[in-house]
Each structure stands twice: as C-alpha cells, then as structure tokens.
Length: 249
Image (cartoon, rainbow, N blue to C red; front, top):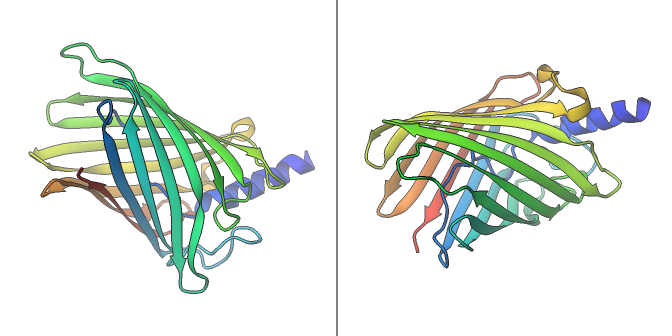
C-alpha cells in the first residue's frame, strides 16, 4: 500500500508539466504514400518553478518544440515519429527523446458524420521530461461533425514499459468542440483532464485539468492550431500557450 501511494504521488507530479504534444486526435490522415509534418510548440507562461521529481526541469518558461513526421501507410493506417526538444533559460537547449506511433481510423460510409479509431505511441524519453525512460500510450478516438460543429473525444491510457521510475497505468480524458466561422477558420475549446491511476481514479483535484480556447485556421496552405490554456486545478500550470503548425508538402 505504501509503495502504491508513492507511485501515485510520483505520477501526479509527472502529469503537471505541459507535455510535448497538446492535441485532441481526430480523423485527419495522410493519404497512402503521402508524407506530412506538424510542428508542435508550447510554453508555460505561468506555473510551477519547482522540479516535479529529481532530474526534471521546472516547467515554467520552458519552450517545447516537437516536429511530428507522418506517412500514410494505407487508407486506414498512418505512421508517425516525434522528435522532442526543449529550451530552458537555466539549462539551455535539450533533446528530450523520440516517440513512434501508428494511427488507425475506421473507414467511413458515404454520408457518415461520425468517426472512430485509435493511436498507439511508444517512446524513450529523457529524465528531464519523464521519470520512466520507456513509455507507451493508447488513445481511443471518437468524434462527429454536424453542420458547422465538430466534436471529438480522446480516452488516453498511458503506462511505463521499463525503468526505475516505472509508474502505474493512468487515464486522461480529452475533448474538443469547434464551430466553423467560415472556410479555414474555426473557433472552439479543448479540454485536457487527468483522471489518475487506473486503480485509484477520481481524485481530480490532484491531477492536471486544463481548458484551452483555440483557433484553427489556414494561411497560404499552412494549417494552424493556436491555443491559450488555463489550469483549472491547484496543481495545474496556470497559463499555457500552444501552437501546432502543419507544414504543406
């Protein structure tokens, strides 16, 4: 029991820093044989100045940039690779690790408005961003489009694969609601909510809860997802700025 309590506390600390990728997954896919590139950016404008665990970089004012390369394998499967980097005024630039992923989106029938799928990620991360070096995450994806509205949900199960800092499986629930103002411009909200370790869920005040106001647009073929986030629990980062840039090929 004592060991599990220690694991729970470590997990809670690990969840509070802004991740390398702040995104609600939907049904966007590269066509078979097509390459894609998204560049994820975020920084904590106001938050904790303390390390979450020994070796971690305090999240406040850290800038994270993660290029995500993707490739359409088939109509239903897409491969991806993340290359994590960060910059801190105290530690300078750093390479924080690599993740690989495979994404599946089910075939939609003509006129079908909803979509579903899954995304599996496996990666090895630096101590500065993860207490356990080898990690995995399985994302369940569901959403629908109705008129000008887009709604999407992700249920994310994360767990450690190895290492002395191995943590128990934990759950996060993310969602997105967007309204299309006009072509290539949508306004909405994204919510990222830690639920906690699977064996002890429900202590939401001890987990990161963040709500983002977001803009999705396109400029000269470049796709942009811009958001300003506000932490809703006492342990969340207070203000986070994020941007995802889709690079045209």
